[in-house]
Image (cartoon, rainbow, N blue to C red; front, side):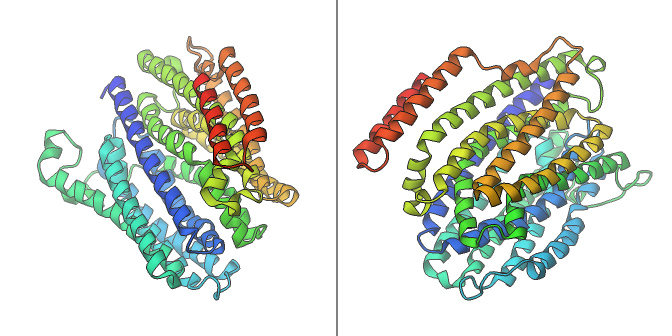
Length: 511
């Protein structure tokens, strides 16, 4: 597969992933708005912060390192060895489930059983849902590596719809089930994912289509762990790279979910405040997950396939390096413009968005301040996603190991910053701590990219230099929308709100 083919497939994958993320976030957005009217904010806090943190931690620590290593293993893949390595995610998941389950059940403060019943069984069921999802991991990596772009969209779409329908039905008809509702919905979600991937590959391998496409596996049995005479069970070079990424993934998880760890382990917010913070956080991150996360996931695959890990630019094929540099510059330019627009318009429309979404429950407290800060944080998320996906695809194993020390320092500083900034400025402190750490991560990635292309004719970091005309348009829009909010929003009637939205629409068209 040529570099142009990889770019085409990566772009298609990013497009499908954007569509998938839009659907996922819209459904989650509507589901939260629906459930807020039937369950308490304390229950939302336990589900969306504590139980979801258990699930995401277990899944991330069990599979993230394997994904990064196996998707960047170069052109000389031995897929039997890779499949064997990927199946290690399941016993690793069982180990993490045992450790984390004990922590969540016996070390953390349990919620009031009268207000939030069935906490213990819910912890067990969420851990089982995570283990169930790990069963599809070898199939997921196969699909990503061979650009089966529609499979992920179909599988996750069906799983999302099934989870949302079950949650809405049980919330209306059996609200007394409490946490059982969300536990059952999570099990259904992961079950649909595994089923879709299994059905696809069973059909693909048994129909003869795999042989026609020169797929590296020919039989259904090849999807299971096996050993070939004369070969080691796993590729030990790839296993060592996985270990390097594993050490890094543990630290990255702390950075990614740091505020939830602080809330869960240090009890800086009660369950009700955690629920409100999580709702605002989900609302603020919608565009980041719609656009930036799919781009990061898809173009990591592109950079990992086009570039040879750990080799200097002059020792690689120049045509492919040139394409990688051009794509990186375009991505940086795109995410910078989108991030700036979100930052400018998010400031003036945070109050209105929360008031429309959740009423005074969200707009009367710290919600608007949280969302305004998050609008600025989105800009940093945008730039970091692209710079890190290139950096991790181009780093050598030794550089990955050294970066683990950087991640360790960032993780420790983030935890301290989160605790003290939250003590000083409430839940807004979480976002401020995230901004500071994200800025440091961006600085490290920019330094790596600058050094990587230093002795070459390409300068992809030019994508981070916005034009003066764009900055002027954004500055005028910020002033006009802030004035509009002060004059028109939001104590008047609907007519004033519509006028405020109209001002923003005109400014956005101008930008």
